[in-house]
Image 1 (spheres, helix red, strand yellow):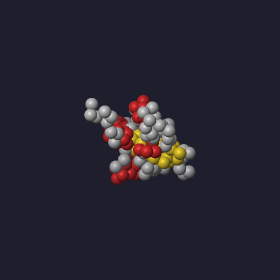
Image 2 (cartoon, one colour; image 1 turned 60 degrees about the horizontal axis):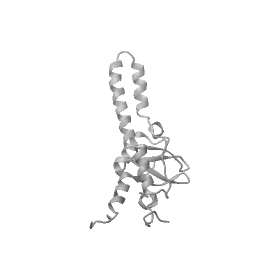
Image 3 (cartoon, helix red, strand yellow; image 1 turned 90 degrees about the vertical axis):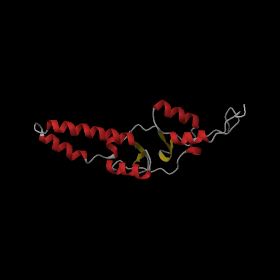
Image 4 (tube, rainbow, N blue to C red; image 1 turned 90 degrees about the horizontal axis):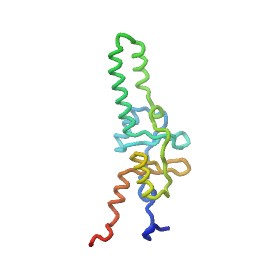
Length: 162
């Protein structure tokens, strides 16, 4: 199959990152942050015990959670003398957050046969930076803005001499 120019279309399977690290819904927020940092990645799909994708956690999700925690910390100082039990309860639950507590549950996914131009449109329309590639509900790859940019860089310019 070829596109209108006669060239074979570039598909997700041609540009996706095939090594995908994932997390379980019970993975702690601290473990998620460590995983992203150690592996130099910006998001992890969250999968259930059968390997089906149930969510995704990004650096942005973790940063928003940290921001909320900071706001709660400031609010706790204001409540310190008024509601000490609330403050104690807040501090107990803060350390127990897991992937399932902050993951995006409505995950946008694509198939391995999704054309690159459709992926670019999807990322732009949904204001997302990456999309999991799934087969039978299981993650087999990930396509990010970086993958698309690398693909664009490898396309020879047509009519470069003109």
